[in-house]
Amino acid sequence: MTATTLDPKTALVVIDLQKGIVARETAHPAAGIVANSVTLADAFRAKGLPVVLVHVVDGAPGRSEAPVGSGGRPPADWADIVPELGPREGDIVVTKHTWGAFHGTDLDLLLRRGGVTQIVLTGIATSIGVESTARSAHEHGYNVTIATDAVTDMDADAHRNSVEKIFPRLGETDTTEAIVKLLG
Image 1 (tube, rainbow, N blue to C red):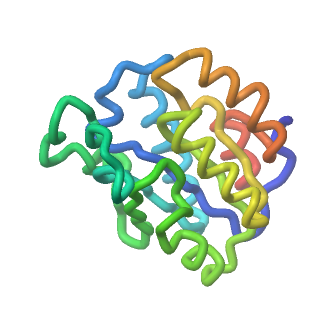
Image 2 (cartoon, helix red, strand yellow):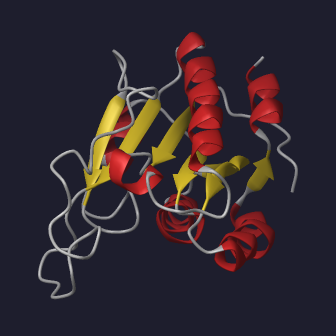
């Protein structure tokens, strides 16, 4: 569904655009996903709206599978947010240990304290962190919009399924350009 409106207090939530994840092979080039996310972040910052940068570290506590980045411990800078994105002064940084950005973090509390009623989502991976966060945001009562040209996945079929079948049930979808226009 095409994005029709943005609430007066909408936050941009960027999922896992960190060095270790953008370095992976993805269905759509990660550089374009980062560039579109930067465009949205700059537009949100210019309007004084919240920008939330989410990054994942390690794995869920108590799990026995290989740590994030498999093949052993990831490099020290694996979880660092890509520098072109930030963080910038005033940005909110959320560290997560699971797929979704709400579980086990203070994201919901931070958004509610700021009066946020809608989120726009970008990031990697579409079918993992982005979809998990979109589902949880929907369950928490937020209006959800996904920038479809600012998300990608390691699996093209999983990406397509999320964009075409899941996201339209959770909210609205549109391009970076259309969302920036809605910001006015």
